[in-house]
Amino acid sequence: MTMTSDDVIAILGPVDETLVAEVVATGATPAELAEAFAWANNDEALISEGRPLPAGRTAALIDLLVAEDEELD
Image 1 (cartoon, rainbow, N blue to C red):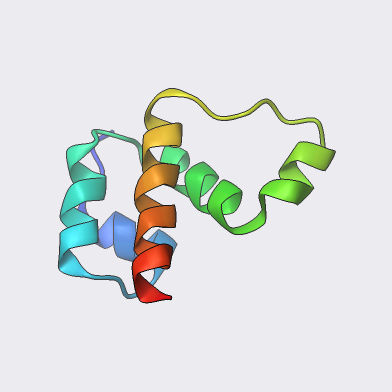
Image 2: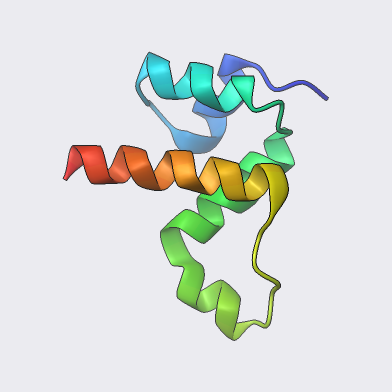
């Protein structure tokens, strides 16, 4: 399922249009974005649960989300 800008905003909340476009351009699914969002915001808890480190599109999304957070700080 192709992700739309509405999907991105539903998962991330209000974000910059550039980030929305970059996320959609990855070709990721809403589930992959939700997983990336969880990892970007609470990686220690997910590691403690024994979840494998993300790869592929999920990892690319994490990079986008972390870079956006760093720009805001």
